[in-house]
Image (cartoon, rainbow, N blue to C red; front, side, top):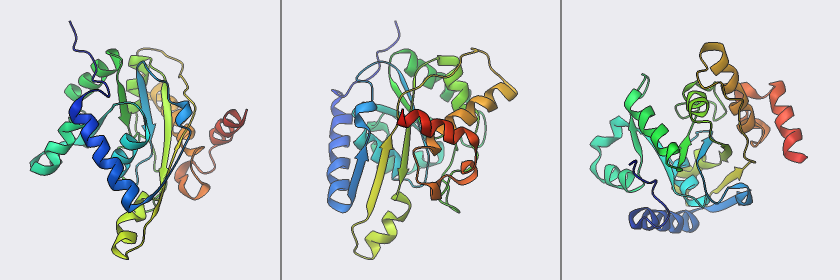
Length: 231
C-alpha cells in the first residue's frame, strides 16, 4: 500500500514550522491574505512566484497545510540546511535537467492526498524581481495528477536580508488566491503544456502588484484572472 501523506501532526514538521513562524514574526512584519481560500484537506498543487530563498519557509508558515517542496540537490551538501530541509519533507531535485525520480515522488505525494509546492519559474527571479517565463514541469504535474491548483504570490522577501542588515524590520507579503482546475488531457505535451503553463503563470501574476508581474504584465490572461478574483 502507498505511504500516507504526512499531516500537520508530524512532529518534525510542526516543530520546524513553529520555529520558522517565530523567526518571521520577530524579524519581519508579515502580511498574509486569503488563508480562507486554502482547502482543509485533499491533494493540492500550490504554485507560486520565487524571489528569495525565504519564499518556501514563508509559505510553510502562512499556509495551514503541510507542504512538500522541491529543493536543489546542490544544497544537500550543507548539513544544517539538509537536516532542516528534510524535516520539512522536501524533495531533492536536479536543477536544469529532467529529474524523473523527483517527478515520480511528487506525483505519488499528490496521489496520497498531499500538498506539493512548486515554483513554475524553476529558479529565483534575481535580476528584475519580477516574473520570468514559467517552465512546463508544473503544468506536467497538474495535467498528470488532475489535482486542484492553489495560486500564491509572495513579495518583499527579496529585500529582507538587505533591510535586516540596515537594522530595519522589513514588510513581507503573501497573498493566496482561489483554487482552480485546469482542463486535463492526461498526456498533454508541447504546445498543450505551454498553454497550461501560461494559465498557471497568469493566475500567479494576477495576485501580484503590477511591478512584480514581469513578462506577464501585459498578458491578456491576467485581466481574465483579475475579473474572476473579483467576481
